[in-house]
Image (cartoon, rainbow, N blue to C red; front, top):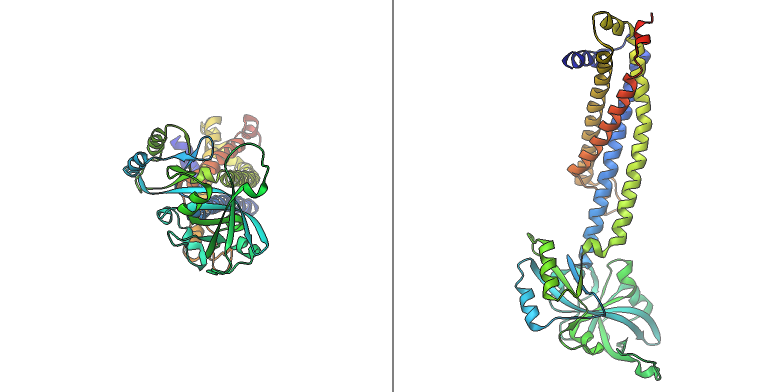
Length: 401
């Protein structure tokens, strides 16, 4: 093994007697470096994209959301709430009541989704940071903050007490409706603010105080729709899930932010995997030139190989020399590709020279796991290629003149 490595290292640093072989070898090494660099950049870009989407959802979604397993409500008694507040894993929590609503203003209508939140809600999410006109509803007032697109459809002015918004929600109960006018609870509110937090929320969401929505729906004080929770920095999420589930008699479903946006992250992971395979395919194609260059090196060094055989080197040792030379080329080319890719990723993180918009650079993230994935990919494929090229050496090749 030491003999094979020594000879391979000598072959690696020495130039071939044929200039064409040298050029092809340089091209194959360059393709390995470029392929490795591209694969690392693609994975880093998708890591940044996932983190960027997570940062966007963190504005509107809590770390943990507790939903009813059946029905529309959760019962949270004062005793349970006191115990919940004692959990060290919870930094802040908010009680929420939410329901579909029918919105009307001066003859213009829109279907919406009303969300009543308590005073702790802004400690759990950063939704108030998306307010671009007016203010977040003041506690105790019949006021709402609504999405930009809802406001545009209803053509409603901010803080206009002479022209209020009508909010209607279906009355709970069963059986056939005989009088449509008695099928809804109705209340009026002033629009205190407008937010812009993405098309999904902007299109149909309005936020109000929990007391206003609770009264509108006729909920008792211990009935809520969901609990939204912000975790402490060192919180054990799995342990907290068990404690909450036990506290609420296992009648709840608990989801974290990724689970709340399951479709989005499945799509991102699928696209990431697809691009990984596409880039790997490009890398495999590049490795064909690498195999070709190794075979040309073998042909170019036929006399050296025959001399080594005459000196007593076995066929396996000669094959190991070529394999080791190819492996060294792969290891060095892969390392250089990752280093160059890492430099570009760090530059993009610091200076954002590739923008999505004028004010938003394309998100990338430097992660060690991407280095491991890329280097493992190039090493495995490269070693297989080197083994394939080395297998072309046989006894007939060595004995022929």
